[in-house]
Image (cartoon, rainbow, N blue to C red; front, side):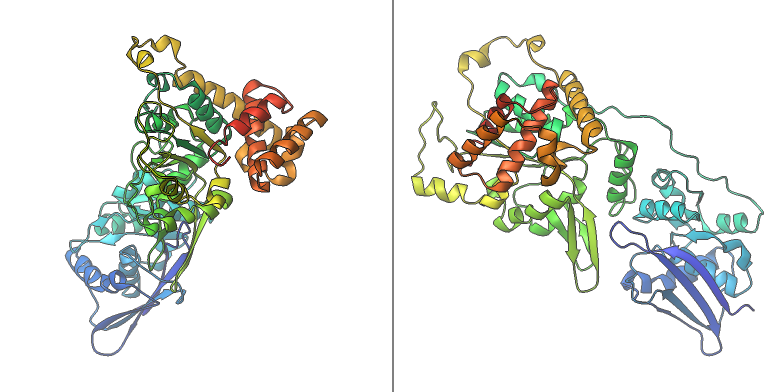
Length: 501
């Protein structure tokens, strides 16, 4: 009897898949099975699943003392992903399976009592890590479609323990999982041409899409703020293969399968009653929140002042750094959160301040308290703050003529052209420009420099607000196809910071 076996697997730690080795040791003593190495409850319960799965699959279960070590010992282990490596370790330790068959291979999978393999979460990060380490990965059959997104990784997908055993001993070899078909799913987004008028707001939405800028719409109820925001994904370019894989890896953390539209940019619209943890992420073992699920996509906060103040303030750091770091007593995780924020709000509690259709009933103190729900530092980080006014009734009652409106596909091509200019010039989108390179790419002349200085002094802009205004100006110049930022671009960019004037 071998007495000792070693099997390789991988744990889940945020978006990382750190390697874990499973050691199985058989010793004399009363029959017992103990698991050490910081296992959570689901891992400790695996001994009963493994015992039944081995017996029901036709294997012998040893009547001796079994010690299973999950190393490294200081890494928390959770979930049923360790069932399969534990079962294989027992088979090797009892000479029912040659140890050579497990070399250079990582095993993941949860076992049922009958020996079938159930899918596990976070399989895509594990598949990517195995590809980088030049290791083969054995997974449940239901995980094959998601894991196949990690191109360059040898994947073996098995239905049950018996089928995997036949593959390992060379009796019935399983064909590796083929790479996914290279097909791009075109999303069916609502067309921006459905929105009547609002040319000013549409221009701001175009600028936000072209430079990946954050945007706040404010105005009376029923003016189209939500309609405009929901049409932003339709004018954004398609995700690259790397971006799509990043998004799929995030969604695989908490779901056993990734939706068929994994190639589409995320559009997350949490309700204003959402807790801070649901937005940012958290838990005793950190899990991602809405900010991370909106990575490479759009996070839409409708009725923004109705969100908890604590939740809104938690937006500040992700808006700057593009990531969320969650620290808990047991673990620390860093989740990507490079999203584009789109928010909508009313100008006052009743919603009709400045509306010529109805009279506002709010006192100045009520308006001030309502607007103070959005702190100055948070507003500073929102590049465009655009008022959406009510349309005159005669314009709304006119027969709809879509040919007179700009369709999303036409605007999307303008966004692609502007983003191409940015990537060719500086290798990043304008919203991610650093203060060090911002002035160089703007190419401001003496007239433009003097103009921006006067504006900042008159409007009391902070340094951050000035930098963000310059970034928007650079995007407007890219939409116009000009190399240098001109005075008209600066004036338009200032006009898009109307809320905090």
